[in-house]
Image (cartoon, rainbow, N blue to C red; front, side, top):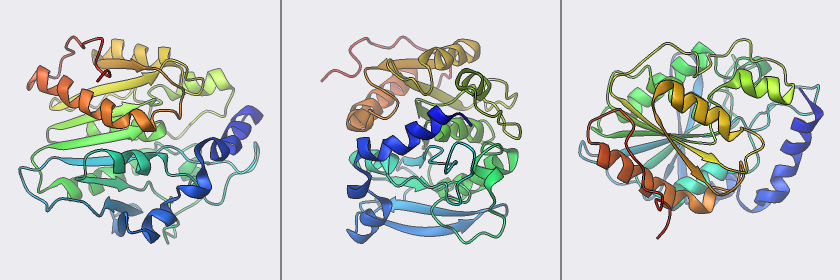
Length: 283
C-alpha cells in the first residue's frame, strides 16, 4: 500500500467532522436502529432509519453499502478494525428516502464473527464470498418489496454492482464514485493488487433486470472519473458527472437520488442508456 493512500485516509476525519457524525452517535440520538443478520458466510450489522415506513410490497426499499473505510492502519500494517470513524453514507441515507437501510460489510462495525481477518478488508474485499454474503442479506431484506434500489459509495459501489448482477429480480443500482475497475485503481496509485477480488469491469455475471446509473465527481483523485466512464462505455450503462471530489457528495445526495429516480422513470423498463438532461441536478 502506498503512503499517499494512508495519508489520505488519516486526513478524511478532519475534513468530514468524524467526531460529530459517527454511527455510535446516530444510535444514541435515536436516528437509526440496528440489528444483525448472518448470511451463512458472514455476520452483517444492518442499520435502518427510525423513520422507516412500514414494509409493504408497494413501497420501494433503498439499501446502502458503504465504502472500504480504513483497511490499513499504516501504509504497511493492516488495520484491526476497517470501520471508518465517519458515517458519510449513513448521513446521506438519512437525508433522502426514509425507507432505507444500510448493510454493514463483512467484519465492519465490530461484528462478533470468528471468520474475520484482515484479508477480507484488503486483498479479498470484493471476494466472491463477500459478494455472496451481501447477496443473501439483500435477498432477505428485500423479499417483501417489489421495487429495490442498491446504492453504493466508492468500494460499496463496487459491491452494489457485483451483488446486483447476481440477483434474480429487478433492481436499480446507483453508485457514487465507485471503484468499477480496481485493477486500474491499484495500478494508478501503486497499491497492492486486490488479488482475491472480483472486478466489475471484467465480471461476466449479468442480471437482465438490473438497471445502472453511476455518478462520478469531476475532481475525484481517488477514483478517476475516466475509469467510471470507461466502465459505462463498455457495459452500455449510464454515467452522470457532478461537481466535487471523492467525499464531497453528501449534501448533493437528495438531488442526486431524485435525479436518478427521474432517469429510471424516463427509461421505463428498459435497461439501456437514455439521454440525461444537462440540468439534472439543478433546482
